Image (cartoon, rainbow, N blue to C red; front, side, top):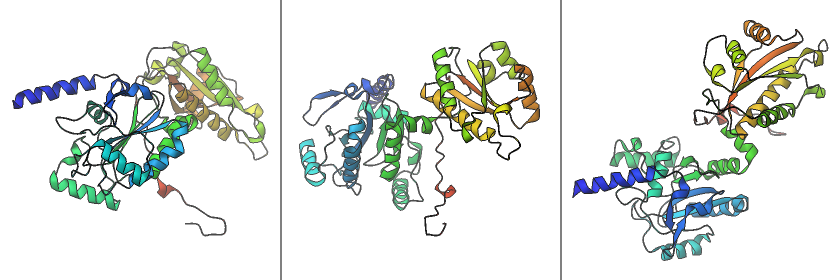
Length: 375
């Protein structure tokens, strides 16, 4: 019997993980009707397992605030009550819904009770956990430290498993069905809201999800996309509107190889490179206002963000002020003396999908309020 159960579990796991996306799953609503998650295509989803008698239950109020604030922009919160953690979600789904409506006036959809771990876990949660495993509690936070201590007493290796650890674990799913992030119940709602804002705003999303790509497919980049990136570069701010840049677009494989110095790697894999240069005839030399480096760096960042927004991969490689590299690039491209290469942007269709690093470090910030003291 035990072997049969294990075989069934393995079969369910294989079938679940073979699902193409979150939109392949069906769930039951609060009256037992099947609902396809494909109904939520194009929406930003926050999926949460909840309980009505938990220390984290007041998060219902915070979730409702998020829902009311961002629903019109495309946010949907999908609530799945679960009684697996301390039996803190007793009663029927109708009783749970009545409690939540009376105490928190929730408007987001509540679905039928499910299990999120173990033999009877819902396939949706098998898939979610496979996409984003447990990454730990913040033990510098009092609640995170408490949860870590409690769970470690039960299982010294609990943190090595992807299982849902407690009520009010959350998954943020992008408009195109990617699991963006997993949040533990102790994570601050303000951090979740920052991620929601980023995902709902295409400009912020492009900024926050951009990461360096160094491996590419053989697929070429369209002329329309190249022009879009160049237009984005030329939309950058410049000192006194000098626009002291010159862009060299390189698509020839032999020339890309020459730019790589015969070292192989990304310059020989990519579809193209855009060499961002400063045009010395457009700078303000001799007046102590040579801002071409700042101006061209701003243009470079715009090109990188545009590439990301177009679904392309890119990486910024240095040039100026390394004399040997500047000379090498200038020679390969036969640039006149008045055109100085600042950097090379390597671009192509990505053959890798690294997770963007979270670079948020509050310790790198100080606030000097008007009339106050610098912290």
